[in-house]
Image 1 (spheres, rainbow, N blue to C red):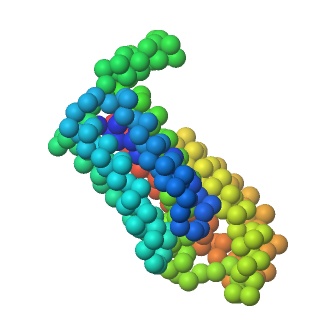
Image 2 (cartoon, helix red, strand yellow; image 1 turned 60 degrees about the horizontal axis):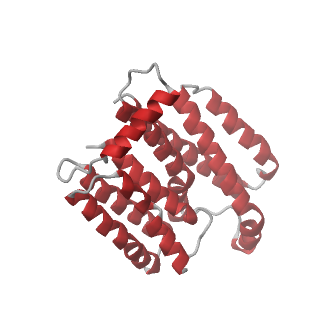
Amino acid sequence: MNYTIFFAVLNLILISRLRFTLRDRPITKMSDFVRLTAIPMLILPFLSITAGSIILIVYLLMRPFILKMLENIQGDLNRNRMIALVIDILAIGVLCSPLLSLQVADWSIEFASRLNEVFNPSSETIVSLQWQTVLAILFGFLMILNEINLLIRYILEKLQLAPLSNQHKKKIDEKQFRTGRVIGFLERIFVFLFILMGQYTAIGFVLAAKGVVRYPEFGNRSFAEYILIGTLLSSLLAMGMAFFIKIFLIL
């Protein structure tokens, strides 16, 4: 499989999906669907014209319709968005496999070689391996920003966990929910980077810092349990993604 192209296409798809990060309602605006189509299309100039690239164009044009159908299905929105991502990963995986084998255009290979000479003239490392490393790390970073967030919210909803009683839910949503998400983003970013750098003990300081900030709110048992489960789940998934990406760093 051509992992360089695989990660490149998926990264553009994940960037287009960042619109979901703080949005809890189905997307309806035409501009959103245009963005979901246009951003992944940026990969096309870097690919050779083959049967695989033509099929990729057809799939990218179909993606907004698939996503719109899933967004309109009554039920769990986070689940439907994760299903859309799984479909994307499977489809791009097939296109990058030896079955269809997407190929990089000759000009982009030459361009990557020139960049390698400019930024690392003494390196004898294969250029494609360097790009695979960069794109794999970017993939992991984008996954922990939005996609893992969707998974965490889905799991917490299925466990029927809530920070406070229903009468306080609106207040929590307005004043703390978005702030809590941002804290979660930063937490996963630090955990992800520390795992890649091998600084495992530093993860404890991140979790301790979050505990200090949240300490005044731990008087409410249900809220404390909600924060603890969310924090452990967030850290565990970020660690898992980091170890997964490290596999591609040694290929």
